[in-house]
Image (cartoon, rainbow, N blue to C red; front, side, top):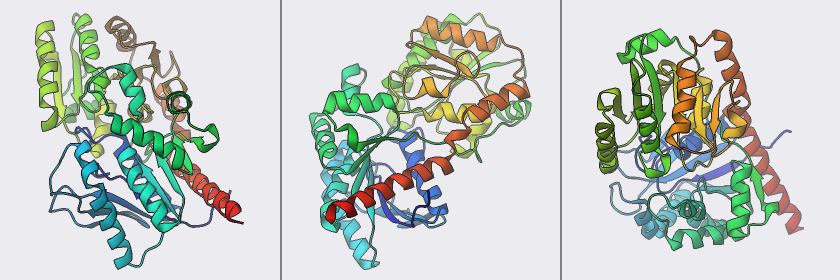
Length: 411
């Protein structure tokens, strides 16, 4: 389908799409927004991504690709603040966005907001500009609260999500599982929901020589490397993975590498390190904190297995990245994992993150002979459909449908 060029305003108010991945409020959503904007730009659309400035040294406008740029707006002080505090500054964010738009004589066909805080801003801009508003929550507050893991999400968020579901022209969701949750918990109209998966940058994430990757990271050929990549928070189930590695401590040269976290995650990291000490595996576990995305393929290629022990994922980008690098995945049944991981071939999907279950599947992969080029090719091929060019084209079609529906409704 041919989609006419559009001018799109993407909102990611609380977290910068080019921020440090793995920090407390930066993760898959940041990758999603940055990659989507870049690929929509390549396809001929004009894309402006608006976010809150948190560093006075940031340029206001940052080019992130052809026809795509990131625009930092003042909203509160120049500092990192808890994302709930951003809510207080959303009026400033929206007013400064409007001032920027007027100053540069800009107009947009559609607003696409990401996360409920941005959705609040998008709803207001929808009224000011008289354009459609499309939203994507990435995670759902009611679902997180139902799990009872980590901090409860405030009623403010739940109510905001409920209002956005009623007011937005289209809701993008990454999985059929989350669509069902959206309907069950928020009574969302299924006709307004479109399921479009997340993507992976296959130019960046691709197999490289495992031996070279290990030498670069200071690992030996004999090491059995288990990898975790993500934010350090209770929902990620990292403690269950550590307990699983504890059950495998008799495995020679076993190493667990945990990538993620920043100063705001220090208490959680200290607790996890304490767990490692209590299990007698502290020498086998390393915490790498933040690693630039450009270096992640090296870690994936060096690993024998990547593990996602999460209680909840809206999709599961880490699995796509790992498989694109030719490394198998052990994951819980979250996000879209059952459609991404081919159980028994490109990894394993387990019912939950019980340490014994995780340890069993990890040990099966560690016991396999060296992964062949054919196995790696299978893994790469299994995620080829998630190439960002394909996903961006699907999002563009959805935007086009929303605009067409609006024209029909105005006749």
